Image (cartoon, rainbow over all chains, first blue to last red; front, top):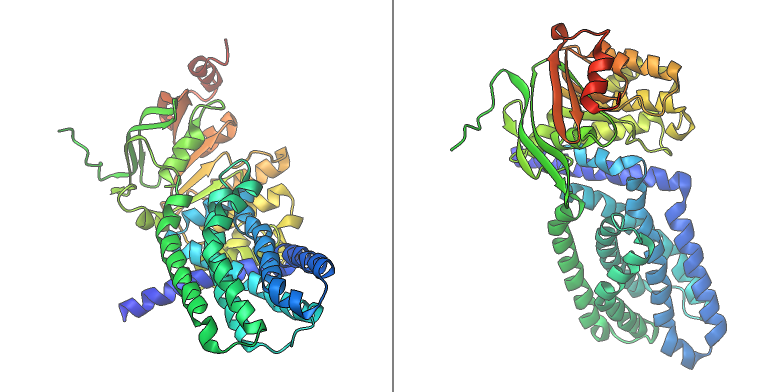
Length: 230
Length: 244
């Protein structure tokens, strides 16, 4: 009973941080709009560069989708903790009687949701630009798993980067090498879906993404306290 | 083995507090005591260590050496328990500009697990005279009104101890008077207050004990009945070397 109440308190606080970020995003549209515009530009430039021929599509389309989402994500993750740095809001959060992991999970919920919104808008445009079928439910699963991995790492490194002078440069330097396994798995699994191969062909890549998501989430939860504490 | 147990009557006890940022010492062995319900005002020039002191006792910064006990609890051992009992108002409001005052208070209320939150928000808003601006975005308010919203945020969970770090910085004289009036009413319900300020007159009005910090050291310490208010400026200038 006491345990249930504790769990409820934790979820209430995670939701409070998440909802605060959603309200802010609904009013400023800083994350979704900037990431979406950047990712769309990447898609359009690559679609002109490679054309929409079947042979090029199979070869480059999966990579283009994930380049757009990954680099767009870097732009967005920079904002996740930057907003807390302004007006010393992070100090306000740190004064709250909550475990530091609660702050991480609240911010993660926001960044994951915003990245997912970007992916949901971007993917149909990507499929249309490359003359691919619009209904690909397996691609949705890949997007959810890869986005979770990106958000887990991006949220942590966003907190690291805000305390550095060159935070705009620091985040991609930290983020990109760490998410390489997820990017590779997402590209391979997407290629399998676009080529209409069976489930078994992408299973290994899905397992890799699930494994890395779990590793990232556990490690980030454990180290977040050391990142944000003085 | 040195005696390190805190005195039972003290709400706040600081012993041998030292903080170094690399080679530079911000605090050099500070000793302080604040009785329950007392109001300690800390004066000092820029760089004296006032903000570092407040950040350490509010658990935001870890000391290099020394001890701080709040209500007999060592802040290094049980910081989460301490955070329920304290609050901080600084010249930064910690508020989100794109949210309304109400949404900011609801957010912080949820983070502190405040019971009867809606009622409590109305109560603190009325207390700082912000009822009519409750649904305005914080970014649209003047700095004085934002500071009042920040005070509402700070007292929402009814903290036993309140730390005020130069809360009047950036306010015009009129706003300073209003904020000081609100701050003057904070030291009620047996709430312990520690305030840092440059404003000697306001500080002397609010406090019941006073400390002057200079270069990380306590250079003067007195209770209200021990000081001559008229001559305090000379004491301050002499202690900090500003009169030379």
